[in-house]
Length: 535
Ligand code: KIV
Ligand code: ZN
Image (tube, rainbow, N blue to C red; front, side, top):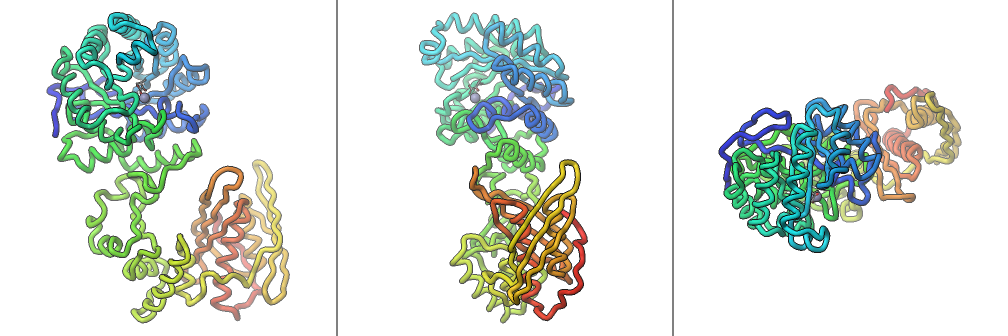
């Protein structure tokens, strides 16, 4: 259902935009950052702020300046360095907060002071000790003060969803008359439902004076898992700003996830009839940036940006996807910045997906050969949770994926100079009894170890891809090195796992060398050659 406002709304740069446009107010650096486990230093905040500007958020809440000198500094630096986005700072309805927020925002191209004050009976009585009248008076005083000090003022009625609706209208009327142009009704404790949200926003738009010239905003928390649904219900009732965070981070169970809101409005555009200014192809990269900056990943099954969001393992789904992607996907992975759908090969997968993957790896088995590979693949998949390209390659070459050797790593020494190159010494043992020691130099320790292994084994490899994935957390975390290198006319895949990433890379390179040598045992070892490319 759509309940559009009649008038235009005001975009982040103060220009009128279509009433069908929903403004995205990102609070990753304020509500998100204040949650346990998500704190960021100034460098990280600036990096994320620039990524959010590129993503196209309309308003970026950079922090709560009065909370600490670090917060003040971060808001000030972000305000000075963004060139398109409106920068907001949070302030309580007290003069000290408002003044320091205004000072922090001084350098912003467009600034917004975001004032908040609780309005619900529970908060009035137990948190503030204020009467209704006092709440209204403090709101008016604060909005009037803030209005003199920045480009625009937003007023949030904290715990709005547990506030008497008629009192909420009274406070909003007072805030708007004092100069606030955005009125935010936060579901501070994540208590409400989509139907209640729709009802409240419809009521506000009907009863707040001059509603057609104001922006109504949602700010939903996820305590009952309804933050996204509740925000969308507000939009259906005419809200034209949604407050949200990347990956849904935020107090307790988090805030509404920006990527989910934006993609819901895009994928279901005919239903909602509104759009945002977000460049959706930057959603996944921005989500990943946040996980890198905070060290907090997202669950595999997280909507839009989780590892499984565009992955299919079951044979029936994979078969459907290969015939027509629309069978099991409602959006293109490229639309959110993910390179491609992945057909994950596991125990639920079928022959169609296996054939397709083998072709990508350079193998085109005939039907009878594919039958044999498929049977061995199913046996392997029953034993293992993950099947990787190197396992499939081994199966295609008629090798046992679990076989190791002939080479194994005996010793490894890596050293790096700050600002200079790296060198590595390896000692390898061959199952025929040879022990070979070699050194390698390179731009980094991984580059150097690959050169050393190439020289020791005499296997020519042109590195095409290298990545490290973290497995587990804390002191016991391991790195999984995934390496692809060209040898002959094939790309070869190798994996290595270790708590030391240089060792993981060495094991991945050795896995490749071993598979090549098992395939052609008579090959000469006498003509070692350096790697042709580096990671
Ligand atoms: O959840 C909340 O009520 C808030 C306000 C400060 C907007 O974060
Ligand atoms: Zn909040």
